[in-house]
Figure 1 (cartoon, one colour):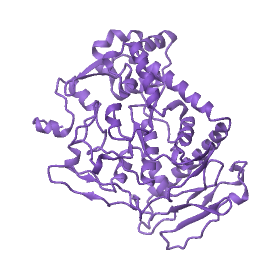
Figure 2 (cartoon, helix red, strand yellow):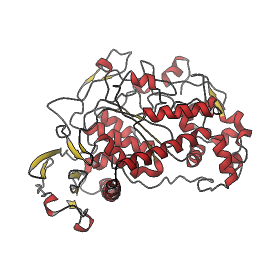
Figure 3 (cartoon, one colour):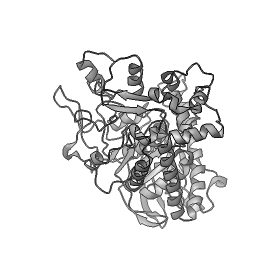
Figure 4 (cartoon, one colour):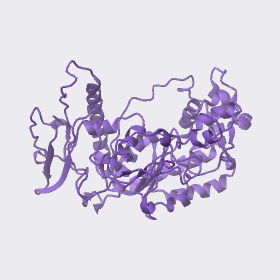
Amino acid sequence: MHTFSQATWPSFCTQSDQMSIMKRGASSQLCTLTYAVGMGMLFLMMYYQPLTEKPIPVYAGRGMEALDASKHIKLQSHRTEEQSTVSPRQEQKNVSGSCVPRETFVFTKGHKTGSTTMVNTFQRYTIYHNLTVLMPVGRGPLSWPFPPREDEYVHLTGERYDAQLHHFVYNKQWLRAKFPPDTPYFSIIREPFSHLKSQFNYYRLPGLLGIDKSPNPLKTFLKDPWRYQNKSEVFFPHVNVTWDGSRNPMSFDLGWPAVKADSEEEARAYISQLEADFKLVLILEHMDESAVLLRRLMCWKTQDVVYYLKKKNERDYSFKKYVPPPKEIANHRRWSAVDYMLYETFNKSLWQKIEAQGSDFFDELEYFKRINADISSHCTRTMEQHKKKTKHKKRQQKRETLVVPASKWSPEFVVDYTFCFYITPKKTITLDVVMRGGRKYSKEEMSYAIIGITTNLARIRKGLPTYNSKRDAKLAGIKI
């Protein structure tokens, strides 16, 4: 079992903060880690799960109830009094005084903004705290671009949910009907030009715009974006909506119509309303600051908001590192003015919220960066070791754990194999299955899965009809 060396401990940690390490027997597959912090008060109990190939929380398999054959599976709440993956909820000391962790939230997941990294944080929190998530029937988005139909999401008795974290175009009225009025709302955005490059590549916009033969299609586009407006604005007939992947796409995901791209004053008022609606909109370029602020606003613990420092996106394309001259940037600012307005508003808001936290915010920030890097390195080694094939496949391998000492901002916690398994997935589907109690999606459920923008975009380019789901396509006699 690894611990941080004395040199890596924060200066405010003393010997009394250290956890005594319990020795495990060679055949032991289950242990309970119990420890005390401060004046002998017992404050945390962690459940150490068996080291299975794909760890499933203790509530796996509970609450699954089949409806009639024509309907999807109904998922009941995971909450029970007798079984829990975490310690009893209790008040914990925060830098601003006593507070109670918030366990209801909505995360509006956009496209190409770093939202998958952030969703992992919220997924882990729902799993460790047995929260009830508003889930789509099939894997993938909850809906697009309007709220889901009644048969497209999993209904619970009383329609009471703790969290929403799948792809969803922000719709205030629909969400307010599903969550309490004091529910905190979150999203994440990024610098608009870097977002444009990602959008251009992911949605293959050069091909859509007819500039894919250009040595640098992004440069060609930025010389005169308005020249390509009749191609960049794409009409999706199945939902009667126009979408533009190059113009204000982040604002679109937060509910601003693409057809109102030139209505800047109206957009400004809408963004002011978003600022009032959202507890925090995280900024990709300031992910660490955003994570620490999220922890404080929600009264969570450090282990709740750490994220995996995976390798940077290795996908290469011709314009990935392109740095445009001032004139092209100016063109983009005019072309995607609402997204720039959105970014500048919430970037400013982020730093105002940080300033209100006091000077010790930056002490915690440095602590967080160090802890996050150590956990990421440990989990990289742990998962690489797990993948290695040995001659003794049936013999359980010894997996080392990492003890993170208590700090001013968080109690001591242990990073084990299960924690690493949860924090390292490349796709959100991995933890979606865990949230479903380990049950994989059936063919019937998958027929309700929302068809992504990329698939329908490709169909539009071929002159084919678009559909909301595979089920809708099948009813029309089309196989997708």
